[in-house]
Length: 258
Image 1 (cartoon, rainbow, N blue to C red):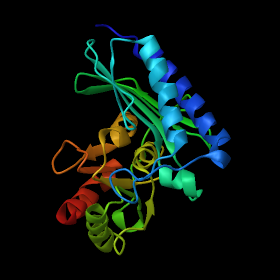
Image 2 (image 1 turned 135 degrees about the vertical axis):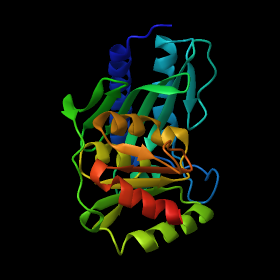
Image 3 (image 1 turned 180 degrees about the horizontal axis):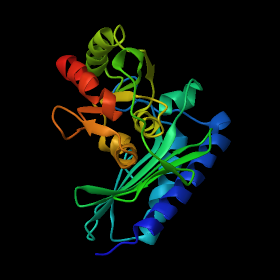
Image 4 (image 1 turned 180 degrees about the vertical axis):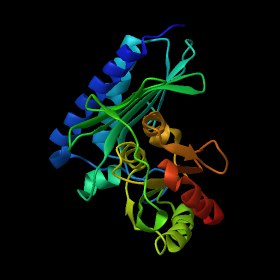
């Protein structure tokens, strides 16, 4: 089935902005539900409302598409296309008002990402990408910088806050922090798009889900960020991204301890 990828990107971007504005408007009245997989895996009624807004509109536009969504409002499809939705990546930041969060929507054809949108509501920044068509921030083309050496590099770190992954992340930070310029802990999608924008020089994510990284990874790749994991292909278990000049040193260090 042919698909107008630019039209898909524009629809997804519009939905991400609508969801982001809802999140800003309802932040003072949100209700936090029971934890999901572990005590730090929190969800609010705003997560749920945002996902329903996005999924319902995608279903209306392309009813034959599958939808994989974090809070469970997706379903199967027959078209061979799949939307991957994280309605609020960084819920803990959102609830506690301690950092940024984003709305993430990606479109896959089979196993290949074709369209990506990551929207950061507070900054009103929309990062987008179309497979083979480059990456943009608010309509301006993104191109990754060459990147500094590791000892001056700013590296983003993302990880699921369950006990096992926190222990794993602690080992990585123990070895990384003394030899890099500095680190920042940021949600996974923003970690990747900040790489694309040159705000971070390198980044790593541990034990994520597909909806955490699907959109951000395509934006990063289309901007020229080098991505990998244990090997050339990145995975939800380990995602490493870097500017080209930084890739070898960062990947070697992270793979050795992660």
